[in-house]
Amino acid sequence: MNSLFIQYFYLQILDLMTTLAFLLTGVREGNPVVRFFVVHAPNPVVGLVVVKIGALALGLYCWRCGREKLLTRINIMFALVVAWNLAALILNSAKGT
Image (cartoon, rainbow, N blue to C red):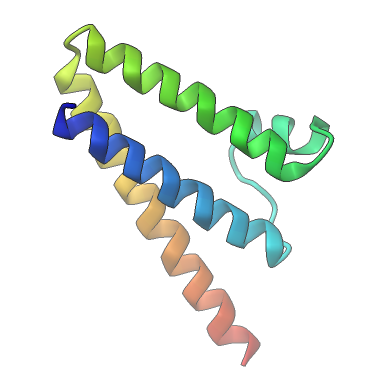
């Protein structure tokens, strides 16, 4: 499997985990599409997993169609999102102590 898609998959897992950490600490989801699924699913985790399955399907589509430049840009964006999420979680936990 192409390393770009493996990176994409890994970043989706990291985004899922940091979003779960946000939800567990009471932080509201910032993405309106994800928020819709989290709020309207029978369980917030189910909504989040549905969104991530859709994201993985889109990433797989990009990879299979040879859209490597697009997948690279998306990977950079998600790396920044995960870094932002981690920084926000660290700062939030530092405030609480």
